[in-house]
Length: 227
Ligand code: CTP
Ligand code: CA
Image 1 (tube, protein in one colour):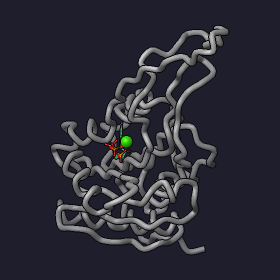
Image 2 (cartoon, helix red, strand yellow):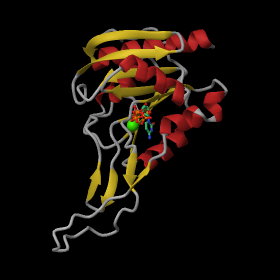
Image 3 (cartoon, rainbow, N blue to C red):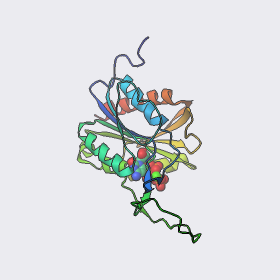
Image 4 (cartoon, rainbow, N blue to C red):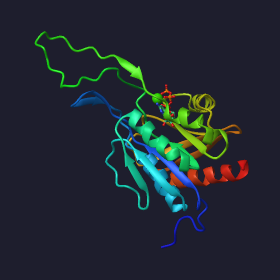
């Protein structure tokens, strides 16, 4: 078998990937989450490893096998994901944020299981905003100094190019990858729109692993030309 990447373009690089949904507790037995499968992020971790990088994958709750040679850190909530990511940032040279991080979490999760009280009234839930992991990392000293190349993802239900470009500028990342969601959630293929300061570039519909390999090649190219 001939390795896909030969020679290894990312040899010497350390790639940090977030993937999957997060889970935010309501009480000890219930929570809110979303339909992200983690497949795109796991494919990117695998492709980065194939390209010769050291890879750490910080994964929310998903049921996917760990790609060969990849170090995996399992987390549940957005805040746990942020903490795990921040531990890895000092060693990372590339950060790819594919996780579908819950934007809000229940403000005051109950310590015991919430019981019906017989009144027929449903409990009210109050929410608080979660930290923005990508924006936090993109604003870190490591990213600002050029030592860490940050890539965001965005699932948009409409106006993909405009929404993705606006999100890239807002998050202050050199590259943002847009896809049309939620249609791609759980699917084995996808189509990507790469958005950077130069404009947009389409990676047409293909299996997620094939797209992941192309994306890794594009990240490598951008890191070489921006260095
Ligand atoms: N992201 C993150 N932490 C969050 C929210 C988002 O790291 N709390 C990352 C995602 O992993 C993704 C990018 O930011 O790489 C864009 O996520 P998205 O949900 O599309 O953006 P939001 O800023 O949350 O905007 P929206 O209101 O459209 O959900
Ligand atoms: Ca969001």
